[in-house]
Length: 118
Image (cartoon, rainbow, N blue to C red; front, side, top):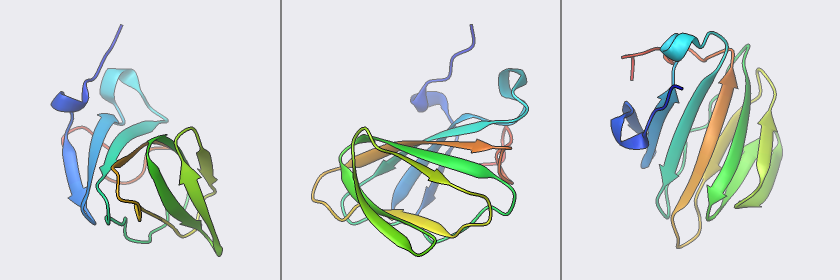
């Protein structure tokens, strides 16, 4: 069994959000998937971006926020999954007064999702 704890994962800060790389390309033999855990303090916002060839999902695990995918914006809460198709601009922000967290899965792994790259 392979495990990775958030406290031992590489971390990348952007837009006030902390992104922990829990599963990187090549880690444990993974070839087609990257997994991150992201903590979003109140007022934080991920810069809008897109992945040209990757599918991505976000699963809100705590709190509330707003996500924009393409031209569509929607309020989210814990227990919500959002699918982001390849080449689609997207962003997520925590506009609540409470912390928000989400898990992101990307396939194939996005550029930079390799061991030691974050």
